[in-house]
Amino acid sequence: MAFTIFFATSTGKTEDIADRLKDLLPGTEAKDVDNISSSDELVSAEALICCVPTWNTGADEARSGTAWDDYAQEIPGLDFAGKPVAILGLGDSSGYSDFFCDAMEELYTAFLQSGAKLIGKVPTDGYTYDDSKSVIDGKFCGLAIDEDNESEMTDERLSNWVKQIQSEA
Image (spheres, rainbow, N blue to C red):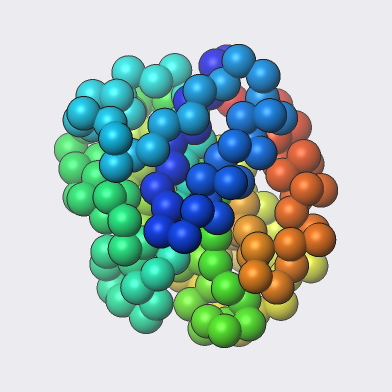
């Protein structure tokens, strides 16, 4: 299964994580959603890894503060039937403990409505935060990354998650 990594970034951290994922998945392409021509590029990918930061903490929608916010509105009307989609979110579990990685849930819900096969859910064990819209049925709906407070855990989390999504795809 060939993944395409789609990311949006405000500070460069999400792009850095996308690049690190690319290194763990040789032959994978990473694309900045700010630079894709249309949602057709998302639809044409064989399998997707979507990397999204959370900036608009506490918001009900448009939580990433990036181009993902527009795509999250389009995705439910597109056909992703059976297509593997994994979501990775970045957040700050200390400074924004009540809204940790909330933007993941928006993409998760959008892709769920489009018929995608959502993969890569992870347990909340080992994370320190107060609340997250991205916890669904007791698990994060994708991989939560905190480069501000838990960067020492990122490499192991990425490595384990890549193995998980490859087996689930």
